[in-house]
Length: 475
Image (cartoon, rainbow, N blue to C red; front, side, top):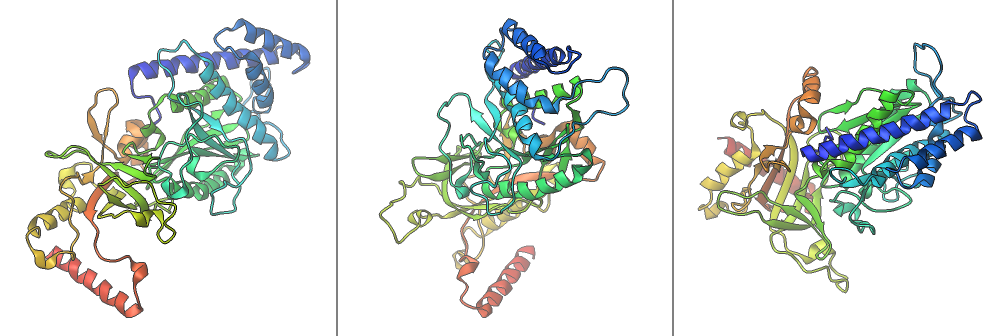
C-alpha cells in the first residue's frame, strides 16, 4: 500500500531497507555474543562495529537509541523453539520509551544514509510526549504514541494549521502531539492476547483524525502487543491489518524497517493525503484544485469554512466546503463583527465523499454528478426555478476523482481498490467488501443552513419541499 511509485525510489527504498536491516542484525549479534548477557564488553563491541561502518555517520546517536530499544528485542534463545518469546514488562509504561527509540533509530538511519539512488521525501518520527492527550483533541483519551511527518527540505518545519484548516501532510515539530499534525497512532499492549483491545482503541482515536484533517483520504495506524507489531489501514468501509511483524526475528524486524522506509519514500497519496487540497498561508484559506475539463483548465477554489466534516470512522466520509474562485485578502483582525469565513463571499459548495459504486463508470447509474448534470442542462434557461435546484459549475469537473501517476503522468481513479492495490484488495474481496469511489462535486449554494430555521413548522415545510423536489427529479 505504501510502496514508492518510481522505480528509482523503489530501488533506493530497498537499498535503505537492506542496509538498516544489516546494521540492526549486526548490533543484535554483537549484543548476544557475550555469554553473560548485555555487559560492558558487549556495548564496546557494538560501538566498535558502528565506528567501522561508515554509512551511518552519527554513531553516538545510534548507539544511544539502540541502548533504549533493547527491551523490544529479546536475546535469542539457543536451540529450537516453538513460540516466539515475549518480553516481560510490569506494564505498558515500560514499553513507551523503547518503542519510541525503535522508531527514532529507524528514522535516524534513513536520515544518515547519503549514498542512496534517491532521497526520501520525509521522515516518520514520534512526538516527544507519550501517553498523553493531544493538545487539540475534543476528548480526554490518552494516546500511547503519535507519529508525525518531518520534512527533509525544510529544517524549520511548517507552521501548524488550525483544527478546521488542517489540510496538509503534517510536519509540525511539537513535543506534545496534536491531531492536526498526526500521521498515525501507535497503541501498545503488554500482552499479545490484548490485540483486539488495541484495535478497538484505534477505532476511537482515528475518527478524530478524519474530523480534523480535511485532506485525509484514508488513515494509517499501528499496534504493538508485546513484541508483535501490526500496521493498519482504515478506509471508508474497511479496516485492514498486516501480518504479524515479530521483533524477536530478523524477518519481523526487517518487515518493520521496510514499512518505515516506504513511508519515507512514497508520495503523500500513499500516506492517505489528498494532493488536490492544500493550505495557503497568505490568504489563510484551504485551497482545492479542481480537475481540468475539456474546455477549462484546472482552477483554484478558496475556502475558510468547512460546512460538514468527516466525523465518523466508517461511512462516506462526506465533507462540504463553502468556496470561492476569487482569492480573498487575509482576514482583517480589526473586523470584530465578522469571523474570517464571513469576510469572504462564497458561491459554490464542494462536496467530497466516498461512495459505494461499480468499478465501471458506465454502470454507475446512481452517480450524483450525472443526475446533477442532467438537472443543470435542462434547467439552465428556466429562470422560474432559479435557486430551487442544485446546479453544477460548468468550469469544474464533477464526479470521480483522478490521481496522476508520478512516473507516467497517467490518470487513474481514486478508489479503495487503487488505494490498497491488487493483492490487498483481492483479500478484502473475499469478505464481500464493496468498492468505494472517491467523488468530488462542485455545485451552487442553495437555501439557508438549517441552523437558521425559525421554528419546527418552518422546518417541516422545508422538508416537504425537499421531498417534492426529489420526487420531481425522479419523474
